[in-house]
Image (cartoon, rainbow, N blue to C red):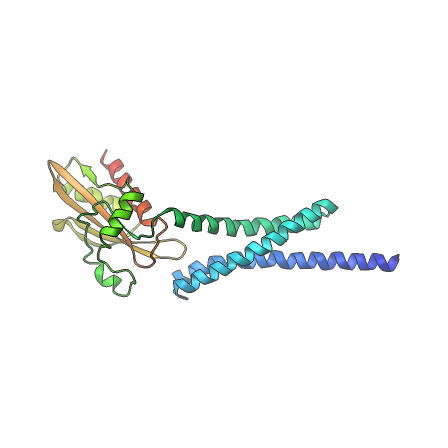
Length: 256
């Protein structure tokens, strides 16, 4: 009986040790996922490498999370507090990585695979000063054309130009103030041409998207158009549309 008790105790320690290893693996996956994006932002590797690291981190974390969840329920059935605690911790860490990744992937399927958004699809504002900055970018500075315009109108019907009841010079100052308040890097300001160019970067991967704003006379007031375009990637997951909406909303609020 004593020998059997020793074997049982060793088995428990071995099982607990294995579970600890699985929990550590989920933590390592979470760290790898974070580094996947920041590594690209800091210039350590290409964004495709970052996506590969992220993908495998999510896959491995998902498997480890399932193991941890099973361990939690097994511990609950046996009233083993250690297994329950470790299993729950691992499952929570895995869920914190897998669920956002799944949600991002799902969001990508709900929006069109475009990355060039503008409030004027017939005559979109053109990049000028930013063109040289996009020389090595996979996506050219030129507007993507009628197909993209049609996709945008279908998916983002709420994107529109802002009409301001003020002269162009005043509207330009208001438009510039909002652009600066958005936290964008201002690349060029051309008041005489009514043009503002800027760059914004996503937090995680540091993907750079370029913005051009055009202010022009319209009737007794002014019209402000904006265009936001990604430098890389086919699907922007709705980022440029969100940026455009945020800018037009803040501009309207600033004009009240």
